[in-house]
Length: 304
Image (tube, rainbow, N blue to C red; front, side):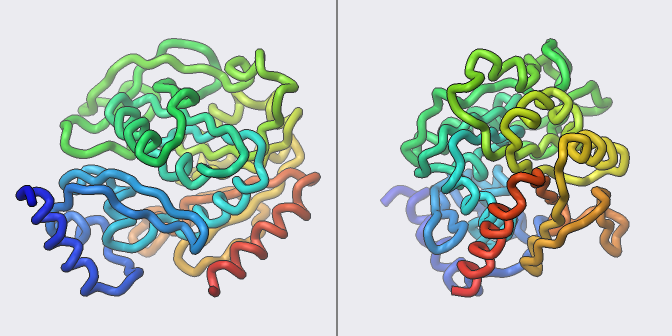
């Protein structure tokens, strides 16, 4: 047994002494012993996959290992919806948890991640789960086709979840290619409907939606997206509402899925938006009955 294998075995023994699910925050998680190994990630009783964790470098895999989950209600909803989807788009795929949670179904999955370090881990995780990397792209999605600056936190010891389009002082900046999804999928029109989309782009969600208005009109996909800033959330609501969509807030702590009239950040007592209230789901008029079934299925599976 190598030193790393011995360390992994010891840390797994420590983990087994804790409850299966817990709510340790990221500060507490980073203080735990560092783990170098594959993490078994459970979404629900029928969906699991593996993600690599090296010395706490991936906050998603870190939460799966120590918390026992990551965005549990959102991911369960996503996984259940993916089972009936024909084509899926994961925008801001990071290290791949949402792409992986859509794996093993009949759908084709396209993953977009512009940060080169995240993209490397994404493709590593896809391969480890027997998923093709042929539809993973190291590019950004937005409202135009262009080369744009992309800013991430400096340093090579943490796979950033805060990368964003634009030039931000104090951050590491490099140019990336950006595409509109309408243009990207223009030569595939009619081959398959896009049923499911996830957008996690640190405040750039509305621009991604602007670049896929044709897809919204044609395919009416269910759209998972974040609401973390006021203006961006308002613009997302305008664009989606104008395309016939209704909105749901997902509470990843209580498991509640609530219909809402306004898309706006929900602030916690600290004045920040807690992760448990990040996610919204936009559902088109024509898919409301189907979505109600997905919500009911998720509630049933969470009580088993």
